[in-house]
Image (cartoon, rainbow, N blue to C red):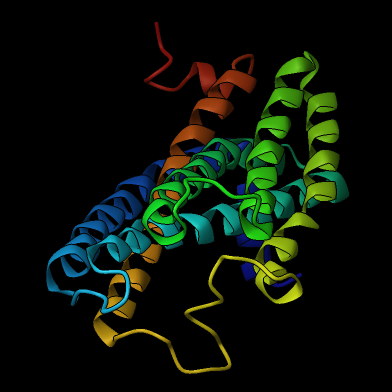
Length: 249
């Protein structure tokens, strides 16, 4: 193992990761706030009106980043779950636990904003479209993960059981992404692709990407803040937690 590998490996210990997370939170939080302000200004003020959907299309600057982040957060959560099962690391399980509520929030936001977008576009707030239905399943997977954790008192058993559930649910993420190709759906196809030119104006694309990075940085900041609380709760019996200024009586 290289010296760099040893240096990063030390952060698998809660005592080392806790102060690092505290230093990173303000940077990611500030970056998320700045990018969100810029992205919303470009999307709601600078970007032109869509010639087909009019002003209603502007909800995509919240809907699409939320949908992307809901899927990406689940993959990251599942990755931490896999690490916790393979290497039996407590910090990996805590990170997965910290990501889940924010992933669930973004899944809900994508469904909620999608309903408001669907009303003027499809004439209905909800249709049993393949992408909408699979995104709803993603939301329920997040809720199931959190509910299973809460139902088991023993933390290590809760880590293993919820990790298995999260890994089983990973199959739903590619279903969401490819649903518009595999089935005849009302949902429009991919606007941004790695293999084709964007199907929108550069200003619209810029706003969407900026908002996506804002959602990403927000997720990191909130997950780091939440994992610090989880660490304090689960490591409350240790000497290093008792010695922290914020836990001193």
